[in-house]
Structure formats: C-alpha cells, structure tokens
Amino acid sequence: MRNFQKYIGIILPLLVIAGLMLYPTITGKAAARETAFTILKAIALASSLNILLGYTGYVSFGHIVFFGFGGYVGFYLLSSQGMSLWICILAGGVSSGVLAFLLGKAILRLRGAYFALATIGVNEAMRAFINNFDLFGGPTGITLNFKAYLAYGGAAKALEMAFYVVGGLAILAIILSYIIRTSKFGLGLLAIRENEDAAEVMGVFAPDAKTWAYVLSAIIPGMIGVLFFFKNGNVEPHDAFPLHASIELLVMVMLGGQGTVLGPILGAFAYQGMRGYLVTSDFFKDIQLSVSGALLLIIVLFIPAGAVGWLRQRFPILRRVLA
Image (cartoon, rainbow, N blue to C red; front, side, top):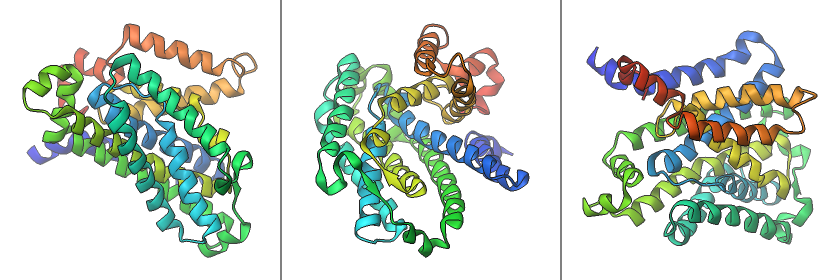
C-alpha cells in the first residue's frame, strides 16, 4: 500500500496515456486515432517544456524549435540517406539535445523577460536559416518518396505504427518528468525556480543545472518531430517552426499546472478540446490565437498554479495523488 501511495503520482498519468492509446481500438475509428495522436503529441511536447518552464521557471517562447530542427535532421536522413526510421528518430532527439546544449550555454545566462525574448529570436533565426539551407530543400522543404513506407508495411501500417510510437514517446516524457521532479537534480531546479541566487548559495551550480534541464527538455520534441513529418510525408519551414505552437504549449503547461507531472496532461486535454471547437467555429476560427493569448493572461492573473495546483491547494488530501 505504501509503494502504491509512493508511485501514485506516476501511475495516474500513465493510466491516462494507456486509456488514450486504447481509445482508437475501442471505437474502431481512424478519426479517433488521429484525435488521440494529436493529444498524445501535445502531451509529450507540453511535458518536455514543463521540465524547463515548470521546474526552473524559465519561460521559453521558442520550444518548438527543437521539434522543427530535430524533425528536419531525422527526416533528411530518412528521405535522402535512406536510413531506418528508428535511427532517424534517435538522430532527431540527439541533434535537438546538442542544439539545446549550445543554445543553453549562451542564452541561459539571461533571466526573465530577456530569456523569453531571446527564445523568440532563436526560433525565428532557425526558421530563416532552414528556409535558406539548400541541403534541407530551402523554402520548399523535403518530401518523402511514397515507396519509403513499404519498409513499414505500407502507408496504412505506417500510420498505425506512428500512433503507437508517439504514445511511447509520451510515456517516456512523463516518466522523465517524474524522475527529474523526484530527484536531487530536480530539487535543485525547483530551488532555482524559487530563488536562483539563494539556490547558488546553497550549493546548486545553476548554469549547469539549467543547461541540462534545457537539453533534457529538447530531446523528446526532436524525436517527435521526425515521427510527425514521417507521418505527414513532408516538411517545410513554416510547418516546422510555428511560433504560435510554442505559445500553445505554454498555455497547456500553465493551464494544467506547471511544475507538476499531471498538469501538462490535463492542460493538453483541455486545450486540444478547446482548440477543436475554435477551429470549427465560424466566429472563433480566425481569432483562435487571440483566444489562446487571452487564456494565458487569465491563467497568469487568476490561477497561476494551474488546475492541479488549484486542486492541491483547495483539497490537501489530493497532494499525495496529484504529483
């Protein structure tokens, strides 16, 4: 019983992911699989951002750059070099991690609004670079030869495979988030979030801790980028580095509860449900991002701890359940 209580913080999120992965099988509908794929992708990306935003308090408006850059690297190896999808997914994750390490050494010296503005610049600079990088197809991007799907049982089987792989990556993101949150390393990150100067006085070497948090937050987005573009069959700069996607990830993390394991999952569910309504509404479809920005402002002003934080404050008994 004690072990169950100890691990309930990770068991509950994993049960949610398991339910999502079973949902298409239960319904037997391809549309259900696509909906679940979108939510699982959002959960994995939001959970990875939470490692930086939730645990260190550093707000990044350019987190999607790792999704795009890793996706481009892996997709290029897949389409032009004929490498295995599995190697390409690993390559996408590693390349994003290396990029995060190099960027972290430079921009993590900044704090607050200066760091946030720098991440916007990184995203736009990367999109401009890829747009003019001929090896990656320039503005037209890269298209995958349809024959590439034959190695994975054809296009239909490849789509089904991509769904289960993104589910696996979502599970990996959640487990990584939980391990970090419950580790000594994570405790140091939380100390940085509360007061970086005081954390350094207490023995936390903040520059290295922040850099490695940045690296860990970047790996899974890079892997998902490869899988997403493989599923779509092509990649272009404007699809790989959409600034609004980073803003949406911020909304998901803060809506559910930053610094928690369950929060990004709830936030991804809620936001994707709302987004599905907005894009199909005649009135809201053209102001979708305005609604996202307004929602982010409301969260910051009225529920800064997010849904999970609010529940834990309101019902103390849930503190053992909602990690």
